[in-house]
Length: 348
Image 1: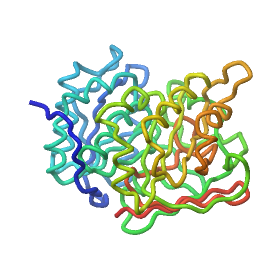
Image 2: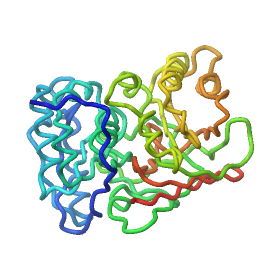
Image 3: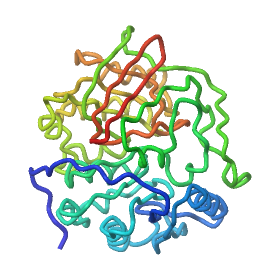
């Protein structure tokens, strides 16, 4: 029987660094890969092998429906891969819509008792990654999904495999450029591996000024985490209390909700106590639309502007490329100076 979450939080653990020859598992806990995207999947798998890793692809990969398989099968395969001592990282092809239906089927206690494995992804995968950090104590890696892995990071950023392989502090800097298109053309050009960073823009602090602050990192996708923020699977407030001596850095990014919806969800996070111990809040650059003349920046200011906590806008994480890998649970130092951002993460 799957465990029911309670108020206990196990000690935070970090997976062992990846090394050449390690096995990476591929499964789709939410949406699978349809026939049009199979060539891109093959490119992504080949890229991991080129980087020196072995790859095992699971059964839950179908793109025929909105999910890759029935929810119990998806939960079982994900759990099995995470518990398999031979698998050192699990990299889903991408997110989707309904990873939430796994939460009461995963055995979080069994995972808490096991050696941690890297779980990598963003978007709908944060619906599972956040509880894995909060409920089972595993650091998780918010970065590119598998289908984005063939891209070469721009100067200043690291590939997610480099972060997962790190033995010491990980330092990244904002490149000052981003891609204005929503995503690459994986059907017409399945082998694409270079970002077209045609937009210019750095980070900024809401209200102006520079910033240097630190804390334990936690966060994910606004749309998917909004659905679980008031449940035991997303007790960010409790995590913040546990790490009050360190402080908390909460990062959030929106996919496609309008600005009014994002404002409501951010207010919900505030009311749930997510920022009570926060040293800073990072907001990812977003392709999500305005609501009339109410912009996404307006949504952030409306919900978070009165907290007396520094808020950093247009961070390179989430649904706008390039993708800065961020580790949930990492001891993190954030510096913003004249539009240039730097993130230093210690994986311990």
